[in-house]
Length: 362
Image (cartoon, rainbow, N blue to C red; front, side, top):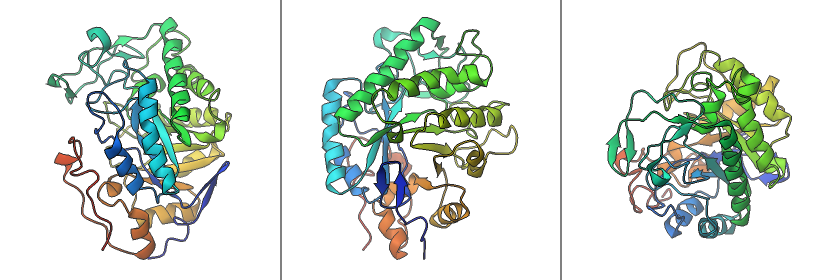
Protein backbone atom coordinates (compact mmCIF):
# COMPACT_ATOMS: atom_id res chain seq x y z
CA UNK A 1 0.00 0.00 0.00
CA UNK A 2 1.77 3.13 -1.19
CA UNK A 3 1.74 6.38 0.79
CA UNK A 4 4.44 8.46 -0.90
CA UNK A 5 3.14 11.74 0.49
CA UNK A 6 2.33 10.62 4.03
CA UNK A 7 5.68 8.85 4.40
CA UNK A 8 7.81 11.62 2.89
CA UNK A 9 9.80 14.05 5.01
CA UNK A 10 8.54 17.53 5.88
CA UNK A 11 10.35 20.72 6.78
CA UNK A 12 8.66 22.27 9.81
CA UNK A 13 10.48 25.59 9.82
CA UNK A 14 13.96 24.60 11.10
CA UNK A 15 12.95 21.02 12.04
CA UNK A 16 13.16 18.22 9.50
CA UNK A 17 10.46 15.62 10.19
CA UNK A 18 11.18 12.14 8.81
CA UNK A 19 7.56 11.64 7.74
CA UNK A 20 4.17 13.40 7.87
CA UNK A 21 2.71 11.04 10.50
CA UNK A 22 2.09 12.67 13.90
CA UNK A 23 1.27 11.06 17.23
CA UNK A 24 -1.81 13.00 18.33
CA UNK A 25 -1.95 14.16 21.95
CA UNK A 26 -3.68 11.39 23.91
CA UNK A 27 -4.52 11.72 27.59
CA UNK A 28 -3.43 8.37 29.03
CA UNK A 29 -3.40 9.14 32.79
CA UNK A 30 -0.23 7.34 33.92
CA UNK A 31 1.41 10.20 35.86
CA UNK A 32 -0.07 9.30 39.26
CA UNK A 33 -1.47 11.62 41.90
CA UNK A 34 1.83 13.54 41.91
CA UNK A 35 1.33 14.27 38.18
CA UNK A 36 4.95 13.32 37.64
CA UNK A 37 6.30 11.92 34.34
CA UNK A 38 7.92 8.54 34.84
CA UNK A 39 9.81 5.66 33.22
CA UNK A 40 6.63 4.00 31.97
CA UNK A 41 5.69 7.15 30.09
CA UNK A 42 9.21 7.36 28.64
CA UNK A 43 8.83 3.80 27.35
CA UNK A 44 5.43 4.59 25.81
CA UNK A 45 6.67 7.61 23.86
CA UNK A 46 9.91 5.93 22.79
CA UNK A 47 7.89 3.05 21.32
CA UNK A 48 6.14 5.57 19.02
CA UNK A 49 9.20 7.64 18.10
CA UNK A 50 9.15 6.61 14.43
CA UNK A 51 6.43 9.23 13.89
CA UNK A 52 7.64 12.39 12.24
CA UNK A 53 6.44 14.28 15.30
CA UNK A 54 5.09 13.24 18.66
CA UNK A 55 2.77 15.57 20.58
CA UNK A 56 2.62 14.78 24.26
CA UNK A 57 -0.55 14.16 26.19
CA UNK A 58 -2.20 17.33 27.48
CA UNK A 59 -0.07 18.67 30.34
CA UNK A 60 -1.44 21.16 32.85
CA UNK A 61 0.33 24.50 33.20
CA UNK A 62 -0.85 25.07 36.78
CA UNK A 63 -2.68 23.41 39.63
CA UNK A 64 -5.68 25.57 38.76
CA UNK A 65 -5.67 23.99 35.30
CA UNK A 66 -6.11 20.41 36.55
CA UNK A 67 -9.25 18.57 35.47
CA UNK A 68 -8.22 14.94 34.93
CA UNK A 69 -7.12 12.19 37.28
CA UNK A 70 -3.44 11.23 36.99
CA UNK A 71 -2.60 13.54 34.08
CA UNK A 72 0.91 15.06 34.08
CA UNK A 73 1.94 18.60 34.92
CA UNK A 74 4.64 21.08 33.93
CA UNK A 75 4.11 23.61 36.75
CA UNK A 76 7.07 22.63 38.94
CA UNK A 77 10.81 22.30 38.43
CA UNK A 78 10.56 18.70 39.63
CA UNK A 79 8.10 17.89 36.86
CA UNK A 80 10.37 19.52 34.27
CA UNK A 81 13.26 17.37 35.44
CA UNK A 82 11.08 14.25 35.36
CA UNK A 83 10.02 15.01 31.77
CA UNK A 84 13.69 14.82 30.74
CA UNK A 85 13.57 11.01 30.84
CA UNK A 86 10.76 11.15 28.25
CA UNK A 87 12.47 13.58 25.87
CA UNK A 88 15.77 11.72 26.22
CA UNK A 89 14.11 8.38 25.36
CA UNK A 90 12.45 9.87 22.27
CA UNK A 91 15.64 11.59 21.08
CA UNK A 92 17.61 8.38 21.50
CA UNK A 93 15.24 6.90 18.89
CA UNK A 94 15.79 9.99 16.66
CA UNK A 95 12.26 11.23 17.34
CA UNK A 96 10.90 14.75 17.80
CA UNK A 97 8.43 15.65 20.53
CA UNK A 98 6.39 18.75 21.43
CA UNK A 99 4.71 19.27 24.80
CA UNK A 100 1.01 20.20 24.75
CA UNK A 101 0.18 23.02 27.19
CA UNK A 102 -3.24 22.65 28.86
CA UNK A 103 -5.62 24.38 31.23
CA UNK A 104 -8.99 22.69 31.71
CA UNK A 105 -10.88 25.80 32.78
CA UNK A 106 -14.51 24.97 33.54
CA UNK A 107 -13.87 21.30 32.63
CA UNK A 108 -12.57 20.85 36.15
CA UNK A 109 -14.07 20.45 39.63
CA UNK A 110 -13.55 22.04 43.02
CA UNK A 111 -12.03 18.76 44.31
CA UNK A 112 -9.10 19.32 41.91
CA UNK A 113 -8.63 22.97 42.84
CA UNK A 114 -6.22 24.42 45.38
CA UNK A 115 -8.12 25.01 48.64
CA UNK A 116 -11.29 23.61 47.03
CA UNK A 117 -11.97 26.76 45.00
CA UNK A 118 -14.30 26.89 42.02
CA UNK A 119 -13.03 26.04 38.55
CA UNK A 120 -12.55 29.09 36.32
CA UNK A 121 -13.72 29.99 32.84
CA UNK A 122 -14.26 32.93 30.50
CA UNK A 123 -17.79 33.32 31.88
CA UNK A 124 -19.86 31.69 34.60
CA UNK A 125 -21.49 29.09 32.35
CA UNK A 126 -21.45 25.43 33.38
CA UNK A 127 -20.98 22.36 31.22
CA UNK A 128 -24.29 20.63 30.63
CA UNK A 129 -24.53 16.87 30.33
CA UNK A 130 -21.86 14.35 31.23
CA UNK A 131 -20.42 14.10 34.71
CA UNK A 132 -16.73 14.53 35.49
CA UNK A 133 -14.36 11.95 37.02
CA UNK A 134 -12.89 13.50 40.17
CA UNK A 135 -10.92 12.36 43.26
CA UNK A 136 -14.39 12.01 44.85
CA UNK A 137 -15.71 9.79 42.04
CA UNK A 138 -18.05 10.91 39.25
CA UNK A 139 -19.58 14.29 40.05
CA UNK A 140 -21.87 16.77 38.26
CA UNK A 141 -20.14 19.67 36.57
CA UNK A 142 -20.09 22.80 38.71
CA UNK A 143 -20.79 26.41 37.83
CA UNK A 144 -17.37 27.98 37.20
CA UNK A 145 -16.46 31.48 38.20
CA UNK A 146 -15.43 33.94 35.51
CA UNK A 147 -11.79 34.96 35.67
CA UNK A 148 -11.51 38.60 36.69
CA UNK A 149 -9.83 40.83 34.12
CA UNK A 150 -6.81 41.30 36.36
CA UNK A 151 -6.47 37.52 36.82
CA UNK A 152 -6.12 36.72 33.14
CA UNK A 153 -2.47 37.90 32.86
CA UNK A 154 -1.64 35.59 35.77
CA UNK A 155 -2.90 32.61 33.77
CA UNK A 156 -0.95 33.83 30.74
CA UNK A 157 2.16 33.86 32.93
CA UNK A 158 1.44 30.24 33.92
CA UNK A 159 1.65 29.35 30.22
CA UNK A 160 4.93 31.24 29.81
CA UNK A 161 6.49 29.49 32.80
CA UNK A 162 5.26 26.12 31.56
CA UNK A 163 6.75 26.81 28.12
CA UNK A 164 10.06 27.67 29.75
CA UNK A 165 10.02 24.46 31.77
CA UNK A 166 9.21 22.50 28.61
CA UNK A 167 12.36 23.89 27.05
CA UNK A 168 14.38 22.99 30.13
CA UNK A 169 12.90 19.48 29.92
CA UNK A 170 14.33 19.02 26.43
CA UNK A 171 11.20 19.19 24.30
CA UNK A 172 11.58 20.25 20.67
CA UNK A 173 8.66 22.67 20.91
CA UNK A 174 5.23 23.20 22.43
CA UNK A 175 1.63 23.00 21.28
CA UNK A 176 -0.91 25.37 22.83
CA UNK A 177 -4.14 23.45 23.42
CA UNK A 178 -6.94 25.71 22.19
CA UNK A 179 -9.41 22.91 21.43
CA UNK A 180 -11.97 20.54 22.94
CA UNK A 181 -13.73 22.94 25.26
CA UNK A 182 -10.80 23.68 27.56
CA UNK A 183 -9.96 27.15 28.85
CA UNK A 184 -8.61 28.76 25.67
CA UNK A 185 -11.53 27.35 23.67
CA UNK A 186 -13.88 28.71 26.33
CA UNK A 187 -12.51 32.20 25.62
CA UNK A 188 -12.64 31.76 21.83
CA UNK A 189 -16.23 30.57 21.57
CA UNK A 190 -19.27 32.82 21.85
CA UNK A 191 -21.17 30.01 23.60
CA UNK A 192 -18.91 30.23 26.64
CA UNK A 193 -17.56 33.78 26.44
CA UNK A 194 -20.04 36.49 27.39
CA UNK A 195 -17.51 38.89 28.83
CA UNK A 196 -17.77 42.66 28.64
CA UNK A 197 -14.04 43.42 28.96
CA UNK A 198 -11.26 43.31 26.37
CA UNK A 199 -11.31 39.49 26.40
CA UNK A 200 -14.91 39.26 25.17
CA UNK A 201 -17.20 40.57 22.46
CA UNK A 202 -16.38 39.90 18.80
CA UNK A 203 -13.90 37.37 17.42
CA UNK A 204 -10.98 39.76 17.88
CA UNK A 205 -11.82 40.33 21.53
CA UNK A 206 -12.32 36.64 22.21
CA UNK A 207 -8.95 35.95 20.57
CA UNK A 208 -7.15 38.31 22.95
CA UNK A 209 -6.51 35.64 25.61
CA UNK A 210 -4.91 33.29 23.10
CA UNK A 211 -3.00 36.22 21.57
CA UNK A 212 -1.42 37.03 24.92
CA UNK A 213 -0.56 33.37 25.51
CA UNK A 214 1.12 33.09 22.10
CA UNK A 215 3.04 36.30 22.70
CA UNK A 216 4.19 35.02 26.10
CA UNK A 217 5.26 31.62 24.75
CA UNK A 218 7.18 33.33 21.93
CA UNK A 219 9.39 35.02 24.52
CA UNK A 220 10.63 31.49 25.30
CA UNK A 221 10.42 29.61 21.99
CA UNK A 222 11.05 30.67 18.38
CA UNK A 223 7.81 30.86 16.44
CA UNK A 224 8.61 27.79 14.36
CA UNK A 225 8.68 25.64 17.49
CA UNK A 226 5.14 26.57 18.53
CA UNK A 227 1.87 25.00 17.35
CA UNK A 228 -1.76 25.72 18.21
CA UNK A 229 -4.65 23.24 18.22
CA UNK A 230 -8.29 24.17 17.41
CA UNK A 231 -11.52 22.13 17.16
CA UNK A 232 -14.16 24.22 15.35
CA UNK A 233 -16.45 21.23 14.67
CA UNK A 234 -16.35 19.67 18.11
CA UNK A 235 -18.94 19.18 20.84
CA UNK A 236 -16.61 17.78 23.49
CA UNK A 237 -17.15 19.49 26.86
CA UNK A 238 -20.47 20.90 25.63
CA UNK A 239 -19.04 23.17 22.94
CA UNK A 240 -20.33 24.49 19.62
CA UNK A 241 -21.09 28.11 18.73
CA UNK A 242 -23.26 29.51 15.91
CA UNK A 243 -20.33 31.60 14.64
CA UNK A 244 -17.87 28.68 14.75
CA UNK A 245 -16.66 29.15 11.17
CA UNK A 246 -16.11 32.89 11.51
CA UNK A 247 -14.33 32.35 14.83
CA UNK A 248 -12.05 29.60 13.54
CA UNK A 249 -11.02 31.43 10.38
CA UNK A 250 -10.45 34.70 12.23
CA UNK A 251 -8.35 32.88 14.83
CA UNK A 252 -6.29 31.13 12.17
CA UNK A 253 -5.69 34.40 10.32
CA UNK A 254 -4.51 36.07 13.53
CA UNK A 255 -2.22 33.14 14.34
CA UNK A 256 -0.71 33.36 10.85
CA UNK A 257 0.68 36.79 11.67
CA UNK A 258 2.93 35.22 14.31
CA UNK A 259 4.56 32.78 11.88
CA UNK A 260 3.96 29.82 14.17
CA UNK A 261 5.18 26.38 13.19
CA UNK A 262 1.83 24.76 12.58
CA UNK A 263 -1.92 24.96 13.03
CA UNK A 264 -3.48 21.70 14.25
CA UNK A 265 -7.14 21.38 13.24
CA UNK A 266 -9.45 18.66 14.52
CA UNK A 267 -11.41 18.57 11.29
CA UNK A 268 -12.72 15.03 11.59
CA UNK A 269 -16.07 14.35 13.22
CA UNK A 270 -15.18 11.28 15.28
CA UNK A 271 -15.67 13.26 18.52
CA UNK A 272 -19.10 14.41 17.36
CA UNK A 273 -20.35 17.48 15.49
CA UNK A 274 -22.47 20.33 16.82
CA UNK A 275 -24.46 20.60 13.59
CA UNK A 276 -24.51 24.40 13.53
CA UNK A 277 -23.72 24.58 9.82
CA UNK A 278 -21.59 22.63 7.38
CA UNK A 279 -18.57 21.10 9.17
CA UNK A 280 -15.29 22.84 8.53
CA UNK A 281 -12.79 21.08 6.28
CA UNK A 282 -9.04 21.32 6.65
CA UNK A 283 -8.67 22.93 3.21
CA UNK A 284 -10.66 25.98 4.33
CA UNK A 285 -7.74 27.10 6.45
CA UNK A 286 -5.38 27.34 3.46
CA UNK A 287 -6.89 30.72 2.57
CA UNK A 288 -6.04 32.28 5.93
CA UNK A 289 -3.04 30.32 7.25
CA UNK A 290 0.19 30.12 5.26
CA UNK A 291 2.15 27.76 7.50
CA UNK A 292 2.03 24.01 8.08
CA UNK A 293 -1.49 22.60 8.47
CA UNK A 294 -2.14 19.44 10.48
CA UNK A 295 -5.36 17.44 10.23
CA UNK A 296 -6.67 15.12 12.91
CA UNK A 297 -9.60 12.98 14.09
CA UNK A 298 -10.63 9.78 12.34
CA UNK A 299 -8.05 9.67 9.53
CA UNK A 300 -6.92 6.36 8.04
CA UNK A 301 -3.74 5.75 6.08
CA UNK A 302 -5.73 6.11 2.85
CA UNK A 303 -7.58 9.30 3.76
CA UNK A 304 -4.41 10.86 5.20
CA UNK A 305 -2.49 10.15 2.01
CA UNK A 306 -5.31 11.59 -0.07
CA UNK A 307 -5.56 14.75 2.06
CA UNK A 308 -1.85 15.47 1.68
CA UNK A 309 -1.86 14.61 -2.02
CA UNK A 310 -4.73 17.09 -2.59
CA UNK A 311 -2.83 19.77 -0.71
CA UNK A 312 -5.47 20.02 2.02
CA UNK A 313 -2.92 19.45 4.77
CA UNK A 314 0.77 18.86 5.33
CA UNK A 315 0.78 16.61 8.41
CA UNK A 316 -1.83 14.18 9.74
CA UNK A 317 -2.14 13.24 13.40
CA UNK A 318 -3.32 9.78 14.44
CA UNK A 319 -4.75 9.12 17.87
CA UNK A 320 -6.58 5.85 18.55
CA UNK A 321 -4.64 3.83 15.93
CA UNK A 322 -1.45 4.71 17.83
CA UNK A 323 -2.72 3.24 21.09
CA UNK A 324 -2.50 -0.38 19.96
CA UNK A 325 0.00 0.15 17.10
CA UNK A 326 3.20 1.68 18.49
CA UNK A 327 4.86 0.85 15.15
CA UNK A 328 2.16 2.61 13.12
CA UNK A 329 4.65 4.15 10.67
CA UNK A 330 6.25 0.78 9.99
CA UNK A 331 2.82 -0.78 9.40
CA UNK A 332 1.98 2.01 6.97
CA UNK A 333 5.33 1.59 5.23
CA UNK A 334 5.12 -2.17 4.72
CA UNK A 335 1.36 -2.54 4.31
CA UNK A 336 1.09 -4.60 7.48
CA UNK A 337 -2.38 -4.86 9.06
CA UNK A 338 -3.23 -2.77 12.08
CA UNK A 339 -3.86 -4.38 15.44
CA UNK A 340 -7.44 -4.17 16.66
CA UNK A 341 -8.41 -1.27 18.90
CA UNK A 342 -7.42 -1.59 22.52
CA UNK A 343 -10.03 -2.14 25.21
CA UNK A 344 -11.14 1.33 26.32
CA UNK A 345 -11.44 0.03 29.89
CA UNK A 346 -7.63 0.05 30.19
CA UNK A 347 -6.90 3.28 28.32
CA UNK A 348 -6.87 5.21 31.59
CA UNK A 349 -5.65 2.54 33.99
CA UNK A 350 -2.52 2.98 36.07
CA UNK A 351 0.01 0.50 34.72
CA UNK A 352 1.57 -0.88 31.56
CA UNK A 353 -1.49 -2.89 30.51
CA UNK A 354 -3.25 -1.23 27.61
CA UNK A 355 -0.48 1.36 27.41
CA UNK A 356 3.07 0.17 26.74
CA UNK A 357 2.45 -3.56 26.30
CA UNK A 358 1.36 -3.61 22.64
CA UNK A 359 3.80 -5.60 20.46
CA UNK A 360 5.28 -4.48 17.19
CA UNK A 361 4.10 -6.36 14.10
CA UNK A 362 5.34 -9.93 13.70
